[in-house]
Structure formats: C-alpha cells, structure tokens
Length: 252
Image 1 (cartoon, rainbow, N blue to C red):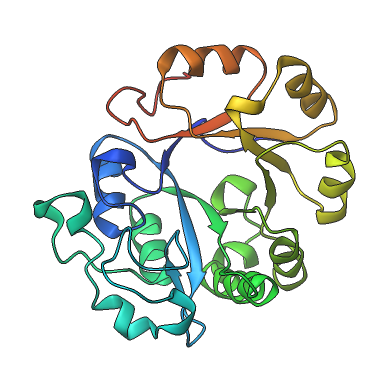
Image 2: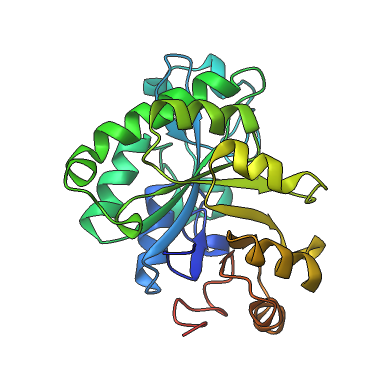
C-alpha cells in the first residue's frame, strides 16, 4: 500500500532551513530530496498556509494566532530569521505556492493537515478542496497514487472532512501512540497508511499494520542506525530532519 518515496524531508529542509517555507523546500531539493512533508493550517480568511504552530512566537516573532491573522499579513511576517540570518524575511507561504514549486520540480508531497484548535473539519474541507483544484488535471487523467499528494493528520475529523471533499486524494492517519482500535479508525477513514512516532513503534505492531494491508510511515527519524532498524521491521517510509545524514537514497 505504499506507492511513495521512502525518505521524506521533514517540513521542507529539516534542520537546515526554516520549516514550512519555500527556502526549506529549496534546501531539501538541493540535497536531492524529491519528497517532502509539510504542515497546512488556515488563516483568518480561510486561506491554506504553511505553518506548524497555531500561535506565533517560535517560527514567527511576536504574539498572535494564525487563525486570527489574514493570509496577506502572514505573508509579510518573517518566518526565517529564527533559523539564521541568511533566511531573514522568508515569508509564510500559501499552500498553492508550495504546491506549484513542488510540481515544477517533481517533488512528492505529504500534506499534513494541521488545524488550529476548533477548526478541524473546516481545515480538512478547505485544504482538500484546494488540493482537488490544484490537482484537477491529474485527477481527470486517472493519476496513479504517486502522482498525487498524501494527506495526513492527527485530527480524525479533519481527515474525515477531507475524505468527503476529495475522496480521490489518499489519506494516512497520524497517531503518536497507536491505540487498540487503530484498524477500525483506518477503515473508517478509508486510509491507505498509518503514520506514527518511531519511538513508540514495536516490531510486532509494525508487522500487524503491514499484515492488515496498510502503508507504515514514521516520524521523525534522525539517526541512520535507527532508520536501518525500523526498515527491517517493515516500515515503508519515514521523514527526517537530518538531510545531511540520511539522504534521499538511504533506503535504496
């Protein structure tokens, strides 16, 4: 059930560039990565933008909330200086800008739907609708899975809404700790994969997930020795922050 690249650049450029920015996407590409994971959240005017934290302070300076800030204002914020002076002034990009960059450069996307608290369903709906439009040509042409992005989210409600809006875009359910009813949840979402924390995965659980017919993706693996270990368990793919240690051909 895994039709996608095995090694994925976490949030664009991992630790080598500001996360969830076009600078991050360019840095990942410079290291040879043709697969990327990033987070998508809604602005106050319901524009999908790349952001992980619902509140300012870590990757953009100041106080405030993404859900209460217009996309145009977000685009004028500095999302790069926290990672280094060379990235000063790097803006918060719109989702459509990043999709355009990735499509132009043949980069596969794991789109994590990251709703602000209380905005789960609408975020899933808006991101799915935007994705359906951005990939209209591929969908109309009967695209194979690897030609489409893969949605993921910790929010069941966001993924359920995405399924209703764009059922042809595949889904992976994110779970920090895999609960006993994981199979029921995957079936309910008509998911193709389970995404989980590699630190809490066991060989027996990995085997059960694979035997059930699902893809198995892990986050965020930064040590080559650990990467090799979980791959022997049957893990299909993982994202990494250490693009300098774990290259795109690591699992080849």
